[in-house]
Structures are given as C-alpha cells and as structure tokens.
Amino acid sequence: MRDSSTGSTARPSGPVEPDRPSRPSRRTVLAATAGITAALAAGPRAHAAPARPGTDKALRALISRMTLEEKVGQLFVMRVYGHSATAPDQADIDANLKEIGVRTAAELIAEYRVGGIIYFAWAHNTRDPHQIAALSNGIQRASLELPRGLPLLIATDQEHGIVARVGKPATLFPGAMALGAGGSRADARTVGRISGAELRALGINQDYSPDADVNVNPANPVIGVRSFGADPEAVAGLVAAEVKGYQGSGVAATAKHFPGHGDTAVDSHFGFPVITHSRELWSELDAVPFRAAIRAGIDSIMTAHIMVPALDPAGDPATLSHPILTGILRGELGYDGVVVTDSLGMEGVRTKYGDDRVPVLALKAGVDQLLNPPDLGVAWNAVLNAVRGGELTEARLDESILRILRLKAKHGLLNDPYVPDADVDRVVGVPAHLRAADRIAERTTTLLVNEEGLLPLSRRRTPRVLVVGADPASPSLSDGPPTTVMAAALNGLGFTATALSTGTAPSAATITKAVTAAADADAVVALTYNLTATGSQKTLVERLVATGVPVTAVAVRNPYDIAQVPGVGAFLASYSWTDVEVRAAARVIAGRADPRGRLPVPVQRADDPARVLYPIGYGLTY
Image 1 (tube, rainbow, N blue to C red):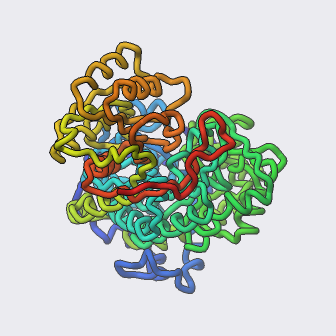
Image 2: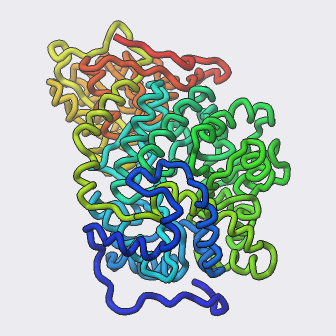
Image 3: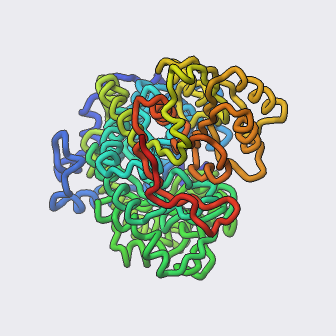
C-alpha cells in the first residue's frame, strides 16, 4: 500500500458488478484517450502499422498530463487473483488483501495505476476463454473509467510446451525444443500467428515468449526444453519466425532471458546463477538469437536474474546492470523497445539487494517494466521516493513510459483495447488451429533408437500394450495425465492399451507391480521424465527391459534421458508431456505418422559427458 505522503488515489466506492462479457462501448475508450487517437494510425490493422509522424509528440503530451504517482504506476506489471476484475471469489479477495492490500483487480488499478497485469492459472485468471475475455475487458474498463485512465498491457507466459498459462480449449502447441526438432521456421511462425490470434481474442496483448536462450547445458533446471536448442543460428531463425507470427497477430512478443540463460545449473527462481562465458563466447552464442529478435522488430525483451562477469564484473544480476542493459542491449545491439524484468519475486534478483532497492536499481540500469514485485507497495513507494529524493529523475521515468505507450499505441490499445465476446468462439481452439497443432507436433517427434525395427508397433503382433511411467502435473488444462493420454491414443489407434502411472520416483513395490503387469502385455511404452543415473525411474525401465517384453521409452521432457537407458528397444523424444505431443508420439509408435524430428541439442554419454552419444541433427525414420 502507499504511505500517507503519496496522495493515494481514492478506491472505488459502492457496489461493483461482475465483468460484462459483451463488447463495451467504444466511446468510453475514445473519450478516455481524447487527443491521442488522432495521432495514431486507425483501422483494424493499426497494431501492425509503423508509427506515423507526430505520434511521439502526442504521447509525450499525454505523459506531461500524468501525475508523478500515475507515472510510477505505469512502470509496473502486477499479478492479481481472481477470474473477474470486480467480483472475484472470496478466496481470491482474501489472497489479494494479504499480498497486495486490495480486494480486486479494479482496486489494484485504482490504487496504483499500474500499466500492466500478468495472468496466471494459479491466480485463477484463466478458467475458460469467455471468462478470460471478460476479465480483460473488465480490467480495461476499470482503468479507462479513472481520470486520465489508460489501457493496460495484459501479459502472460504462453510459451507452449511445458509453460502455458492458458489451457484447453485454447490451442496448445509443441514447445520450443520440439519446434527446434522440427526445424521449420514456417511452423514456428504458424505457432506465433495462431497463438497470437487466440491470445488477442482473449484480450491478452503481450506474451512473454519466445525463449531466446541457447540451451547448451543439459543440467539446466529452468530452461531446458523451453529453448529451441543448442545451435545459436538455428535458435535465432526460429525465434525471429515466432516473433513475426505473434506480432503479425497483434500481440507483443517478448524475447527472453537477456543476456542468455541457457548455460546454468542453477534455477534463478531459487538461486543466483553465474554464467562464466567469455565476452567472445557470449557474442557468438547467447547474443545471436537476441540480435535476430531485434532485427525481426521484437516489441519487448525480458531480462535474466543472472550474473555474467564478462559483461559486468560488478557482481549484479543482469536485471540491475547498467553495462548490460544500457551499454550492451541498448547501445551495442541498438535496441530501443521495451525492456521488462523477469519476475522481481525470484530469488536471483533478491539475493544481493532488498525489495525496496531492486526496482530503483532496475530502472537505473535501463529497465522499462517492473514485473510482479513480491510487495507492490514497497516497490511502488521505493520508485516514488527515489524520484522525490533525486536518485531517479522524472525525465528518466518519462523515457520508459514513452516506450510503453508506443507499444500500446502500436497494438491499437489507445484506439480500442476491448475484445468482442464473439471473437472467442470464432478464434479460440477452432478445428483448423487444432489440426495445425497436430500436424506440427508430428513433425517434431524424434526417434533415436529402433532396435530390430521394433517400431512401429503392429496391432496384430503386439496388440496388448502396457503404458507406464511418470505423470508430472499438467502444465496447462489438458486431458492428462500423460500415461492416460498415451493409452487412450493407442486404444483409439486399434491397440488394447492399459495405463499404469508409476510416478517420477517409483517405489520398489510400484516397480514390482509394473513388472508383473508387463507379463500380460505384448509391448511396453514407458514415459520417462528427467532420468538420473541413480533414480528409480531408471531402475523401472531396466527391470521392464529384463522381462524380455519389447520396451519403447518416450522422454516426455528432456531428450537426454536416452543416455541413461541404453537397453531399450526403441526410444522417442516428445520434448513435453502435453496432450498434443503425447498423442503425436502415439501416432508415431503406431505407424500412423513417420518420425521426422531431429535432435536440436547434443546428447552426451552418461559415463563420459565429454563424449557425444547423439549429435545435433540426429534422428531416425521409418
């Protein structure tokens, strides 16, 4: 909450009504942005048009009318609990009061005048498409009804694969490493185009995707399959293609995590990673996809909470580093778009400084948007007091606000931020989009082992299939768990398949149960999830192989699992456990689709990591 010296904005008073799903009056928007829209390109494709002369002048005039408190708020993108902007469930009201000091999204906007909101499934923002669209309209309405109210950037992390905040019935695509295995820039652009169109129909206008990290560390706990791969040029081409797809659909894409999070064994959510790349290696490896994103016209770039001593020896995370963000990103790479922090609640940015210093130092480093601070009141007041005390100038805030408003103008938000409810059924999860996801997924499934032509399985010779393995929690609303999805898909393809979930750490009793069940099967499909040399998942697969029943292993996350189970008859990499990828793997197992994917990362030997077992580009077919 603001302190008493800030001139707190009055909270909304009186009863509030639930968000209306119907399209609000356009007059509200035009009135709220009077004098601005005349300087912006009009029409349904305004978001894709370059800024016309005079736009910056109009935006600067808008900034000049903002109070200091409104300027500070414009820099923040904040989480909020609830499915409705004005009438969330009581549990979400309680969570908002505890964490933010407000009851609803509308009160959050009135109190802090935030420039953006981020949606999460765990915050109950994304129950179903019509609800999401209504929430987005309610958020925009709450802001535009305020004096000098501005539309908000509404963001989410819709990377697809293992990170997707909006689930079914929206279209869910293979994730980045799967697309890397497919190797098709056209497919990457299609993913961005379709996903962007569906997000836009839901009122989400900024997506924190694509991941531009080059994953060269198999032990990377936070990036892994979220990366397109280990070849910087291949990653760059796919990043640029996806950016063009998203932004062509009117959604601001975000390349992350600058200056590159692909070579770390520490998760920045829980620790402070250090990247030891030399300046030369960084330029040849990590920087390549970001350069491509900038050339593609990327709207925003997200920072990483990592230390890169070769780029800044001060020991600060990149998010707080002036040499990295202003010197390299803005200066050397020539980027003048929006820079957004990764979540300020992550440990990687909180290790060295307190929550009151982090937002101020981020702005001094060159950041524009401050994402999801753990305590908004502390962060908001810290920025306000830094300006009042002279550590930050109001002109510095104006620089960032201009970039943010340019982004809102580019995507048509200052003209009309509302979305019609009719677009939800017309655009989201329509059959053509779902078919495209299935076709793309089939081009990504990668076959690494196929001893004696075990695959494809025959319905005549191996009709009874036991599906066992890990059932990690679904990363989005899906038909999971994955063993159930695989068994159902095989049943639909003419097999008699049974699912037996054994988990990511099966007990001795569970392993024995699976081995016993295998005696009644003609073939086993084992789903693996991040196998380790000493883990019981490996023991499970080895015991199943020892039965003599043909075993096909499917890595439903990292393809590196193959190094731990060399005895399997066949091995596939699906790169995720989402429905679209598991079902594509089932079609490959059944011979309804040929395996076409090629490894986008090398797989090292388990007993000698210095030696490559399977190189980039490896993959078998039928």
